[in-house]
Length: 114
Length: 114
Image (cartoon, rainbow over all chains, first blue to last red; front, side):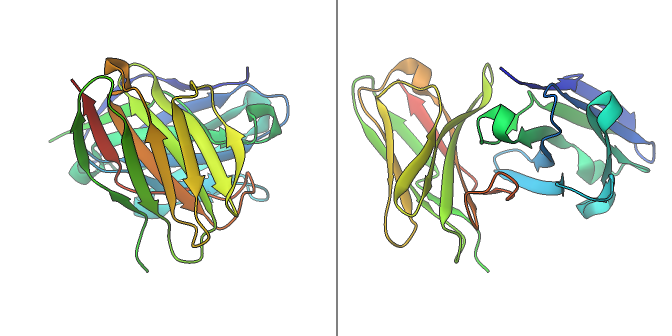
């Protein structure tokens, strides 16, 4: 079965530092790509999505992600981390090779140090 | 616009009982999906409904069932509860069933089975 992999279950950065969360998909056909964030005791909030078009996608809260077909990747970045960014981040993909449903990665917990 | 509403927020049940969870989608959204979230398995797809029809189903036993009403509200039912059914159950809605449509999540129902 096709899958989506998030490298690193925990990432720790200092406040003001670059945030980089990694996501790779396995399908031969590029899927639809999403990043979601989950704060404690809450549901998932959509950060950004890539469907077609420009490969650099800007989302909410200063996050952006770049789709690289050659690397089958969709890494999430933010130039300067803020304490409020501490949360769990999920990469998700959908498409025919994923059973036409949204398939999630295992998640990355982001810790921001002051 | 009101978000996805899930009730109740918390539930405690004993093994062997059955439970019904409710989800009201964003106004105008006609597709509803359900996910189970656990620390060990992450986010697992349960099923998707559109226009009162189940369009997709995940790999869960028949004890897990759902339905959608004409107003797009959805319920899921779990019968003969097992300890392993303890999880956060998330409902998500989207405008339509297309794989490129982003899902909007509720805050979930946390089910504890004792």
